[in-house]
Image (cartoon, rainbow, N blue to C red):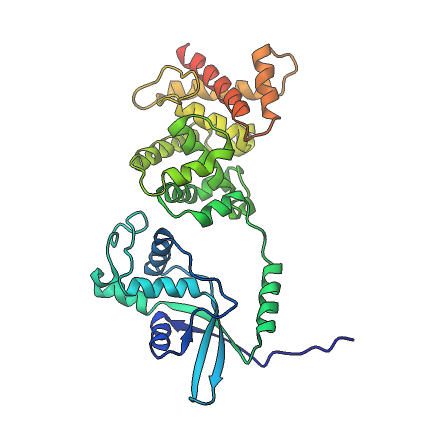
Length: 357
């Protein structure tokens, strides 16, 4: 039977940023032991971290290994996990980069030395949760992280995008999808678990891309995170339009969206864009005649009746060629651009006809 060997010590506590600075200045903090990756963060990622600290948001805990230097009678702390965060903070405190306005309008384009005393104090007194490993060998540390990674769920495509980008498009998509978290869950468009895996962020990104360039294949979504990472002048206008459509959906369905087929993301996407098209163009479809100003109660009633009729078509067997193509598209790959266009065009045409009657 294999012998179980316990580690010598393990301690959990909190330390401030200033604690780490003092250790570093006294050469009692090692940021690059052999089991840590070198710092590779871009300034936009660094800015996002500083903004999180300024807003007092929780950050992942830091792991350090504590070693006693008998000869010099000092305690050395090696950062096992968290060196990129600590390097970023130290770099900012030394005026190595500015906070970006996309992350913080109040302190955007300012170095640490340009912040007011309250903001500087918020950074220096920010507390990290720290696990200290005492008398632990390299092999034990490798084992610890192998075990931690065992319980980590692999990131999906949207989570990978969220981890890679920190700019304007990501902030718009993440902010809007988060704002409507209750909307997604209450209307049963997504479950709580699905929102934890950022499914609603993925849908929101797809909708904004359609606002910009028409209906696209989901495979190219990363291009928009890249293109609008550093600058995105239309973001406020597009967010207002998104809000407008959500309000329209609430006005049409009330509490009944969750009881309809439109709660399914593929149909929701098409219905959302069709309602958007009542007032605004979508580049790669035949647009309906737009309506200026608020919709009347009569127009809302026509739209609701039309959407109800489309639900009946989905359940029907006696279909025209156009209706059959629409119903068939629902069962195809939901992120396929052509299927998305067929679904959206059909609903656009039906609403357009209903409003013109």
